[in-house]
Image 1 (cartoon, rainbow, N blue to C red):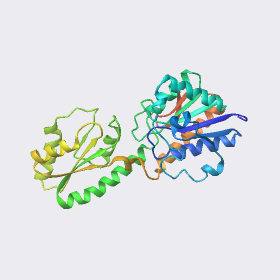
Image 2: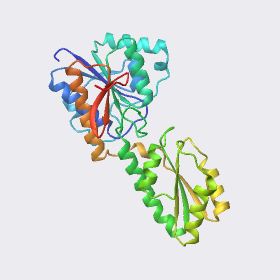
Image 3: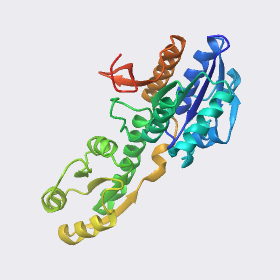
Image 4: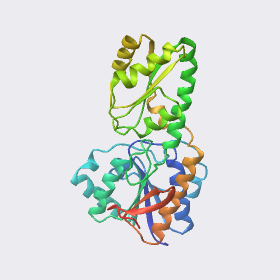
Length: 304
């Protein structure tokens, strides 16, 4: 791999474990005597030519830190044909042989567009939403879920003390994967996600009312973001179940914090797989988890 240049970027929403993945890729590439360029602020930074060479000392102690040291941003420019062509030309000017993109569905869409104009690509799923369909798991999901459950456990203490029902909105974009997982872990009275239809009276109000009638001290309703108005839900539960209700939006706290052991290990394995693919000139691949193992697909979704 000597004289080869690998560029790495993180794009879209950040997530715990991105730094661990960057570290694994960069160390593996540097060990193969190739050059590593960090692209700062995702595709927006790429178009702005914000590249910096990565050395060992830059990544020696970042795997345990949340977020992404390469920074991230959402780019409107990369969604256009002009932006894709400009990004491709800049990568060629920088003599980049392959671009590794870590992120969610928006990151993947831009990567596919770059592949179509001739840029060799490796994609790695990094999103707390866990909504990359070709992979069972995305870096960041476990940490985000644990953060939410930890916050809910604390909320439960005060809800129990006051005999309240807590309505908790969690992240997930347009996917209910995170909410469903959190609801199960936190033993929610009801979990509302866009993928599953429900009857509000039967599936939400009645369980809350029943818990109250049995003198159980609290109820918990977990709601996936961008799905329902949680203040409206709170009002309806209060009026129909006759209980005191409080609303909590966990928000971006779920993206922060030190990555869990699972996210560090998965990020490391995916990063090392990226280096293996690059060394063996297997480009235009998506690194995924299938049946609990790290493998890869081509960017058309065919298994390798």
